[in-house]
Length: 111
Image (cartoon, rainbow, N blue to C red; front, top):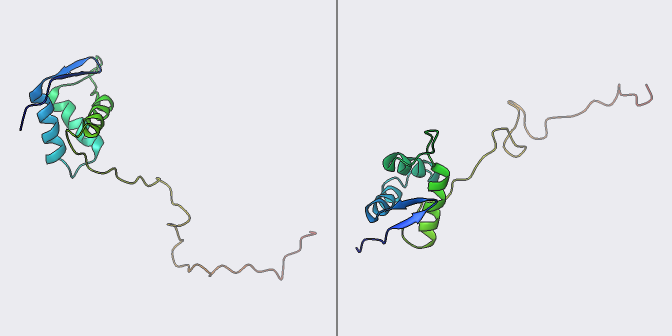
């Protein structure tokens, strides 16, 4: 395979070898999510902010751009579930869907 042409993205230049490493990470770490692949690439390339934190957001954007250009293939995005129960997923224990029956005999709306 022909080595890719070096590029500059977000103020950082990436060599052909670094781009090949990104493609390898996307292929070898396909069981992980895209964000975790971006973090891995940042660690491998020591791509950090001045405060020492990884530039994983910028790396993810670069990986997505490289995918659009056909250079690499990222795993499909995982569906995100909310951290709270949703009506379609939550059912109180020991209750069937039609088990609730309100008792109206003692109900007095004027009281």
